[in-house]
Image: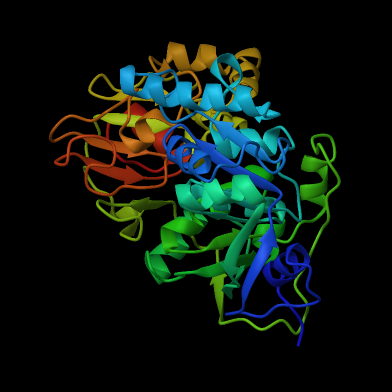
Length: 416
């Protein structure tokens, strides 16, 4: 019996010839990641172990991105813990202030995560790196602490659900619509502790930004990870970025899957996740007369330069509705600079949008766009739980950058 791409990566990192779903392994970790919310606890637990140095200063990355720039004393103290620990440990991949970006956009951009890696991060959206052909998954802060100490993680090899996605995408439909459609089909627990492998000609024709969007939201279906077989598009993305050697893996033809789900995208509409679950999916044609107070374009899901270009193309020469606020968040300094140099900032500012420095901020209801009671937000982020972006009586709708931009102009949810 052959192995899936996930099983092959895990077998290599466990120094085994093969593994199978349900097997418990101890695997070597290529990158261990924490942020300004999760890493302070991990650092505290690490110090309790009595170990003086992390297992490898080149394989531990700390990114204070959630409350950047610091919004209050508590967030400043959290960031200070990371800053001091990174200095004490001489960490290679610590980014702060003008160098910081949203972690799951920054690490691939800098070539810190590469194909074939095993990555664990104390953040649920660590699954983003599956778009590169890596096994990446979120863990708790205590798991991060022990991994920083010994460089290994204990895992159960997940079963894999294979999604065969075919057909040419209609105009105005993107990777975000594909993953929202999938979550709508299987639900928020439909892939619980399972690897979600995305295949098919639709996936093969997507750019890396859309692939990252899809893998990013595997966790919203309960997935242990999301993964896409690397190819020429992956190679083009990583070859000039990779800071170390990488390896492409692919599933065997006779690999065993828990389930295979086929999806035809030829008639797919833009999708909207209605409150209060990412699985509460409706077609854009079903979203009637929903007035929006705030629109957010950004986050580790949809804050890449490709997303900003889509939004700018729609916003050019238009103005945001007088009853709606539009917040644009380029997710890394490089993307910020690209957007500025390409003239996107002029388009956004002329449209009366607000441009934020790189931050996770409003996605988690932290800062830079918190919602008041009764307000409704349309956002390119990944979650719309009760109180996710502010007041528990506010509402969050999820969509693509194209829908977000068009709706900001109209002041209500509309198709691009």
